[in-house]
Image 1 (cartoon, helix red, strand yellow):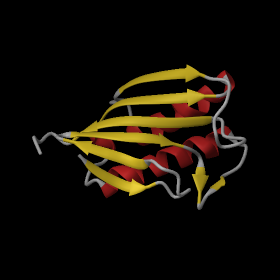
Image 2: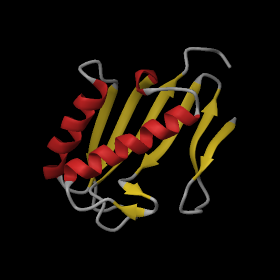
Image 3: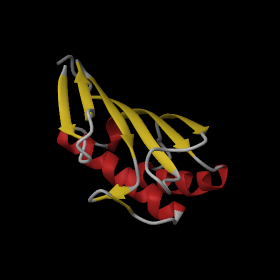
Image 4: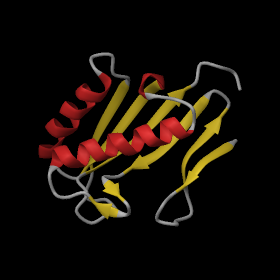
Amino acid sequence: MDIIGVHPSGSAFSQAAKVGPWLVVSGQVPTRDGALVGPDPLLQARQCFDNLGSVLSAAGLGYSDLVKLTCFLTDASAYPAYAEVKREVLGTAAPAGTAVIISGLLVPGALMEVEALAWNGQSG
């Protein structure tokens, strides 16, 4: 297993782990340089996808390698913003997905967190 990046907060988890052809991406929250990007759901969704793209790139992958997304939302009213940005970034060929409404996230003010599973199409 290869570890991709250490979380910028210094916490004890990595941004992703490569296991064979799979990349398991930790939840990406709407922060930039350690701070929440703001309360706007569209801005938060864009930042989650920007952060996801950075992790994929660090592993030599891209959005087209995604096979599964899971979005954790603290409020169902933020889902349309997530869905809009997902369409902007991934087009109509989006991977499998799940959205779950939860009571809260570790980042105060965060409305969503996006985790992913990607496949590099190779055996190693």
